[in-house]
Image (cartoon, rainbow, N blue to C red; front, side):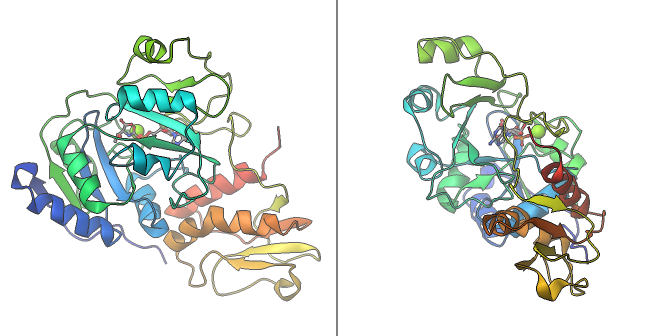
Amino acid sequence: MEGTVTTGPTPVMAAEAEPEAIARGVRCLAGGGLVAFPTETVYGLGADATNGDAVARLYLAKGRPSFNPLIAHVADLAAARALGRFDAEAERLAAAFWPGPLTLVVPRAPTCNVSELATAGLDTIALRVPDHPVARALLVAFGRPVVAPSANRSGHVSPTAAGHVLADLGGRIDLIIDGGSTPIGVESAIVACVGGAPQLLRPGGVAREQIEQALGHELAPKPAPVVSIDEAPLAPGMLLAHYAPRSRLRLGAKRVRPDEALLAFGPALPAGAGAATALLNLSEHGDLIEAAANLFAYLRELDARGPHAIAVMPIPDEGLGAAINDRLRRAAGPRA
Ligand code: TXA
Ligand code: MG
């Protein structure tokens, strides 16, 4: 069964209606809903970063063909430090540019409660403290991290006004908070601080020169294989780091062989399931939203048991199933 994203037309609330607009946004996020809101760069489509089902619905609403990792937005540096590990360079950049149009990719912290689906199973996390009164008010009132990709359908341009969001996503999301035009109009610059010299992964709202000035040295050259940038498809082997289990994955499995663990989907288990070395079911009722929310965590859990291989049952290639299959194919692909 494929879940729908939302029902009926999407309400638009003027941010001047604060605090009602913010209170409604918070209720919506807390209930697992999708709320578009302005940041200083572009409008973001927000979901509770800690709620895997909400994150899955977000990918579905955007029509993303793959689970590109998302930026977790937080109210301040202290909240960011609970999610990621900041080395001296990351601290320097955060001090110089937050709140503002800079996203930092840092190693995931042990205390990080962001859904693995939002980080696409990576060991790193993209963090940003936006500088916009509406975004800040929403983050402070919600008190949890909010993942927010640009609030456009996949492949469309980023929205800089509430009307763009409505045209692209109306009827697919739960609320739009209209805070007028976004002042910067291009997405944040993304810098990775994951050991070694920081790297500029995406040019954006803060210029390279400003970043290098704050660091006191040059950014490392952009790595040849680039981590997923924008909506570009993630080709296997083209990533700095993408989730790759140690165990071999056998996709579309209609029976389970001895020595295999089983990643199941739906109520009808395949022959040999009873003898699987381990079994986790992405969704017993065959719900693709639930399956997406569980995908990376379950792959990790089965992989940790060190099976000879992980047999993965066929997943329907519709709705979020297309993105699930995309990530499974990458995880099953050749190793670097
Ligand atoms: O200005 C912005 O950054 C806007 C506003 C809404 O904050 N958001 C935005 O998000 O542009 P999105 O999802 O459209 O772009 C986020 C980019 C993607 O290209 C994604 O691949 C990259 O960030 N990203 C996220 N996590 C990453 C990670 N752990 N490592 C490398 N890249 C990552
Ligand atoms: Mg985007």
